[in-house]
Length: 304
Length: 292
Image 1 (cartoon, each protein chain N blue to C red):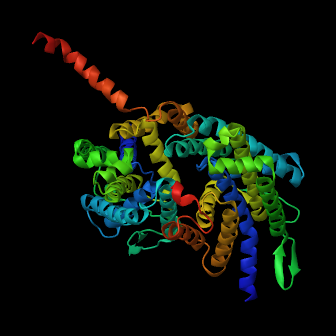
Image 2: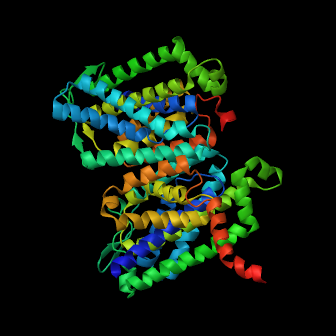
Image 3: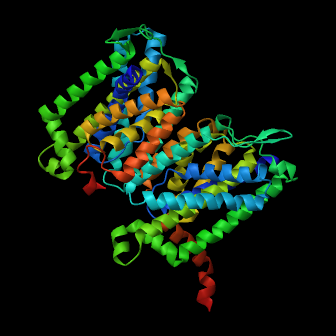
């Protein structure tokens, strides 16, 4: 039972990471800083609950807010750059964050020894959940409640003017600018939103894993988020969710896939880009799903 | 003063490997207008192939290096054929994604074979050094310098003086026009890609010789260094990459001498970001502005 719940939590956290990547990609930008934003959220939230003694419901938004600010500032500076210039710059930022955490020490003494980020040793002993009597089921519930909230936000965004603006910037920036959209502001908003979402996932991860290592937040983590979205689909946020869920659960279900997990991911990524460039869930899939739904009701409508 | 001079000299010599990495990146970028994110792992592959030959088969170093270069040229051609040729002209993200896929696969294959441990790369001259005018020069660095300079001169000659080189330059200007002039774009793209990967493999072997240690993290490390080099020197510019590589080597050499070694990466990535913000075309890039 606990295994299933742990897996559900991991899946939920990975989906959140994928959604953060989708937010940035929905404006046509490729960010390789999502792993770093995830790390910023993890460190900030963990610091809040262990060192500052704040409750979890407060720590998570703090981490998110910090990452949103960092994302807005970084985006404002870097989003003047285009395409892979932006991707490279975010990659460099991600590595800067990783190296920063490798050197970052800020501990306080407690009865059970020093607590806080300790450079290369990472951030150990994040025992908030155990100390406050959280069960695995409760934590899993929290992860999926947050995910439900994010689902609502992304669904609303999808039909809102803001979401349309994101897509317009993605499809054609020149046209978007020509109809009076402030394309840079839109891209910065999306990047900041993505950073906040990634940090939320990071905060959850920190308390779930109980320890953090700086190496975990390097660009490999950003690549992973990118793979979820690219395979799942970049047309809609449902693609990110399906991609992350599928790629987290499949390795668990088959031993052989588990052993060669990254090779399978790599192959899938290449195959999807070659043969289904919009990802598995694209506009066509959505239309097909909608028709499937309609045709079931069609006879009733015909009778009326 | 002589200490600083020594660090600058060491940095410049070691930086030649970065220059090779950057040149490989820029060769591909110049011709195909895309970045090969699998390049780091190709470099790692080169180092490990040479290591396996030297350690398990007692191959002479020179031969092992050449074999690694040839093997990586083949790997490069496979990557180009499977990941890039089918999606030529697609959205800018597509080649980034497929080459990320290739890099993950390559890395994982080498982790399966060699594990994530550090391997010793034995050479006869690891600790030998000579003294010139009060400065000490490590023999591995001399080899790096010699091999890199030879390769750069050969490449320069190839690009400026030969028929193929001229064709490659034409492709960098305008692929469609080049095709209309009867240039076999497919074959030349393949050739350029293989050449870049062979250069990367040699850079990998040189790094392995000089640090006498190889591990599977070499690839991601070199990918990042390569980015710093091409952004410093200018995307698509081959002399720029050479200059950027040597500069990065010097910056690293000097920071390592005066600050804890963990700050080294902080400086190089900071440099990259500042460069991108202040002068995205790099020190020697020209055509980039219209391409971006």
